[in-house]
Each structure stands twice: as C-alpha cells, then as structure tokens.
Length: 348
Image (tube, rainbow, N blue to C red):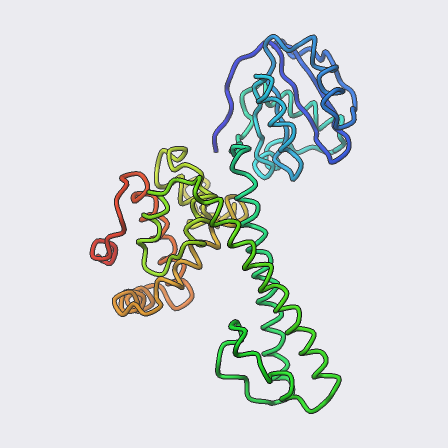
C-alpha cells in the first residue's frame, strides 16, 4: 500500500458520483473552508476551487467515473491523487455514512498522509486498454453461449460434438441434431449470437492490433517469446501494466496481478488470508490464461506441471505456474530479455 504524503496549503476531498460530487476543502490546519454538493461539471468545479488553486491537492475514490476529473486536473496543473477504494474501505469506517461525511474524511485522510494511492493510467492509452477489456467481456459471453449448447447436449443425453464449437466451421448441423423443434430453436439462437460475437470480436481485434503500433514494440515482442502467448494476450498484459517501472519490486508486481495471497498475522499467529479482490483482475485472468496456453504442445511444460502437481496438488499447480510466469514477465520487461525456457523450468 502506497500513501500520498505530499504537503500542501489546501486539501480537497471529493465524494464523486456520476452526476454530482460533494467537495470538502480544508487548509493545512484542518479548518474546513468549503463543504458543499456540486454538479459534475468542470465550470462548477473550478468556481468552487478557484480561491484555493495556488497550492491545492485533490483526491477522489477510484470508481468508474474518475477519468474526467483526473484529466481536468492534469490539464490545469492541479495535483490529483486517485484513492484506492478497497483500501479506503478498511481505513475510514464509521457508524454513519453519507456524501458529506465521506468528502470530509477524504480531505482529512489526504491532509494526514494516509490516502492509499491507485495508479492514474495515462489518458492517451485508456481507450486501447478499455477496448481490450470490452473484447474480453464479449469472449466470455460467447463462451457462456457455447457452454450452454454443450450443456443442452448433456441435458438430452446426446453425444457432444467432438470438434470444438469455437470454430465456426464446426457449428454446421449442430442444431439439427435435436429432434424437438423448441430445443432446436434455443440452440439456433445461441449459435446466431455466437456468430454475432465472432464478428464483433474479430473487428475489435483488428482495431486493437492497429492501435498496437503505438505500444512499445520491443516489450510486445518480449512477451510473445513466452510459449503460448499470442499477440492479443501480450497486448492485454502490456496495456494493463503500462510501464514495468512503476513496480520497484517483483513482489509488488505479483501482488498487483493477484498472483499471491496476502497473509494476516497477529502476535506471530496466522489468521488466514485477505485482499483477494485487491489488484488487477484483468492481469490475473491474463496470466491464468497464459499458464493454460503455456502447456499446449509443450512437453517440457507439461512435465514441469506434473512436478508441480505432485507437490501442490492439481488445482494449485496451475496457480503456481501462473505466478511464476508473472515473475518471469517482470524480469523480462525489467531486463529487456526474451523468455528463457531452460531457466524457467529450473526447479525452485
């Protein structure tokens, strides 16, 4: 957890919503100078903070609508601190909760140097990252449809097609295998939606690959040297990381990718784990996917997986492999070296 400890003359805490925001501005002695609700409009925001802009720092929680506020502060050289919402939840608990109290708490925490920072992703790269996230959403919806088709085969005690339905050429005649016209209609609807998702996903991938020319070509090449990692998966990892330099240690990177569990101890006694939802869920998925792809047509990788399985069990072995791929990625990008299979498979 990183805290913002900058010293300023004025501190502004904002409880941000889609249409309104509640501002609380205090001076460096803790005196409340402004405390009111405003519409989410740049003009209203600047009217409120104009008397305090000489030495002002602004903070807001990391929710879905923070982009415009961060960009606005950056354009006008106002220091902006993005507060980590999940860490804040553990810090500013209280009996009563409302917008007025939340904005004051944010300002007080900011003045006290205990605002946990989230990363402000550069605005010029956000569209490509968000497009990749949308593509992942569509692929998951398509997977749900294909799973429903397979479940329907099991439901009516029919043999599931041997060829993978992910390929369009293998979907011909699938609906006709059901004799009931109503069930056939259900499967046809799933197949039509799958075809629509195929077109949308293909179009998004073309756009992403076109925009990928602005990414670091060498870093993209390095990620694709990992066995099984293709261009789209490498782009997903690279866009979610942005720059590896923002992680001073490999432990910080693994924690951000949700590849390690945080332990809780008190008086030397373990109390379990926590923080499972803190970190980047998209990087967690990407390295989990990379672990599965790493095993395809890779006899040495499968042998290593079996060794991990004997030590950790079947379920945990893939998680260990994903964590090790995450560590390898960190050092590859830090040292600008390609993936070394011999070094990776050395037993640890």
